[in-house]
Image (cartoon, rainbow, N blue to C red):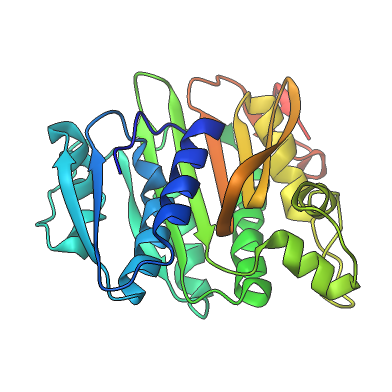
Length: 288
C-alpha cells in the first residue's frame, strides 16, 4: 500500500485503518508498503501495532519505497530497527523513542514519560509548576493503566516527535486491545456505540474500574490542552474523537482499528506559565 501524507488527522488514520482491513486476513504473504510522502513519526506507534499483527500471521513486511527523510527519522526514533535497519543517532534530539512496552512495565513507562516527554530540556513545553507536571504525567500514566487493566493487549506502543518549525510536540500511545466500546459495554452490560463510549470515558471521574474513582487526570490533561491550544485525539474501534480550544469533533471510520489510539499535540510556542490553584502560586498567567 502507498500511504499519502500521514499527518495526525482523520484521513491519515483512515489510511492506516484501511491498510489494516485490507491485510488482516493475510497469512504467509508479502505485505508491501510505501512511505515516500510526509510521515508524522509519532505514528510509528500506530503503524508498528498494525505490522505486529501481520507478523504474527507469518507475513513478511516489505518497505518498497522509503523517502530518504522518512527513513532517517525512523532510524533515529528506533522504529526501523525492528525491521532489520541500522539505527541512527538523533543529534538534534527531536524524537521521542518508539517503544513496545509490556503492560506489566508500568514503572518503566512512567519513567519514559517523565524523562522523554515532560522533563526533557529539549521538549520546549510551556513553563509548568511541579503540580501541573505531575498531573500531566499521571494523566498519561492513567491512559497506560487503563490499557494495562482493561484492553487485554499484549503490548502498548508509544512514540513522539518534536517539530521545531511548527512549534509542535506530538505524542501517540496505542494499545491493541478490545477497544473502549467493548470495555465499557462489557463492564456495564450496555450497548454503546464507539463514539458514545469515548464520550462517556472522557467525563470527569468516569471509570470502568470497580469501586475506584477515576478520570481526574484526563480532565486536567484536557484542560491543559485547551489552554495550550493543543489537540487531543482518540481513535477506538470505528470511532474518532478530537478536541481543541475550538470544540469537539466526533466521526466514524470505514472499518475498525483493532484497539485504541491516543494522540496528544502540545504547542511549544506557548509563553504562558501554568500552576494549580492549590499550589497558591502568584504572577502566573494561567491557573487551573
